[in-house]
Image 1: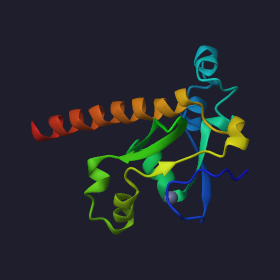
Image 2 (image 1 turned 45 degrees about the horizontal axis):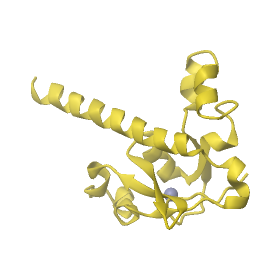
Image 3 (image 1 turned 90 degrees about the vertical axis):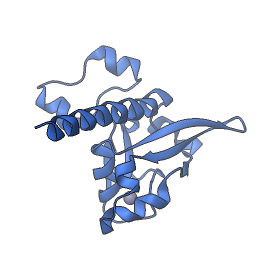
Length: 147
Ligand SMILES: [Zn+2]
């Protein structure tokens, strides 16, 4: 199912980017804890609202937690802004340069398809994962420079 949630304008090789990782939940040998599912109002990791429709390269950046969506209230309407790590924004790698222009992009879900969109809680979870990954990268850099 194609949902109108894109970061960039590419419509090539669209994929479902899961907020709660499908591969991690498979590795654990089970589905996610019922409490987590209930808390985030999803039935399973395969639930449509656990995903965003992204192109292959945005999916890669999203899965590596180099971007997140921030819920904001704009004139009483809930919208989301897209943010990237400094590493992505400052990158000179040709395939990553285009993300610079997407920083702060406003994303609005189609209201008539709301049951297929992530809840605000799930959107906020992208920031939690982003912050955790950022701390992890800082720790790794520290370890590396102190060798
Ligand atoms: Zn994209």
